[in-house]
Length: 428
Image 1 (spheres, rainbow, N blue to C red):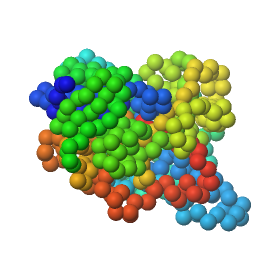
Image 2 (image 1 turned 180 degrees about the vertical axis):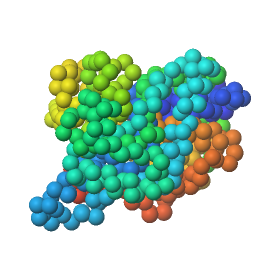
Image 3 (image 1 turned 120 degrees about the horizontal axis):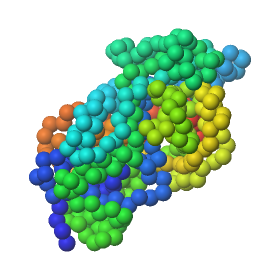
Image 4 (image 1 turned 90 degrees about the horizontal axis):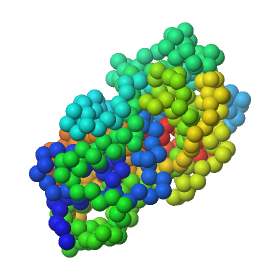
């Protein structure tokens, strides 16, 4: 039986980012244990570093806004009209996302120069393409809701939009751009963290399932795996959509993390037709470094079901073709469904659990795992070493669920939509 200072449960983008951050000083004995299950979110991500987009309600929020606006215009009694505002995330999350986003240029350089791994970081910006008055009204609401971020917002009239993105449909009326929001290749980022951690001395237990967490009194002492027991002084739960089971083993308490399915489709390789990432009220569109066009995504709470649905995929494809008519001639290369690790308030769950020693959480990142992996690694490294954290993590602690005062962040528009499936920006 081998002893480790830290055992990380889960090797998706969050667990691997934590492993890399902890291993930089090469002074800790670290194990990363991972078993890829169907629907693993890091293998299904779009790879968007959309700090502003994710924090201001693009995707699902604007879709519902347009629906309600049209119903009200037609005289319908829409009891959820109060939901007709951007789904702005709380300031602590906004700040967390922006801080993490700002880390990527230096992180990209470090991984390239010190470890020879490339996450394919691209400065693209994120354009919210406007097609009608409802899109424009929603965009104006977003801008008004973030007065301290105006320097990152750029308005494009129709002529400027078509000059910068000549393949956008000519009936678009303009766009709002976030100049901070870029992209990486999600596979490459996850693999870069893992490889860099391996080079720094982390032991990798890949294709290895976790079967139990051992505890003596209120202290976690070990991890049982399909390859035997790993004794440890610290367990970090980075189990993604499967984090609750690890938490139950470690603490005896439920963890409010649940799978949220997102369906995505991707085209064959195409010549470069986009200069930025695009989001609309129907879908988002991102051209990756290899030429593929990635189109997403749905948001569905249906357990661990990873089946795709033709009607959902057709809806995404139609939204993409409306935005970029050239895509009518594309071939679909593949499609998939991933399981995001959702939480009731859409905020990550970070740090200790009351009454339990030798255990930290790094889960519930929902659709922002790629984006917030950098800051999560930094924060968990600080927590393990007993240092003051770079960010106040009190809004993200597990104990917020023990006080009964957490509201589901999307409750207003989820209830009004009357559906468990809506399109919106997924885990980036």
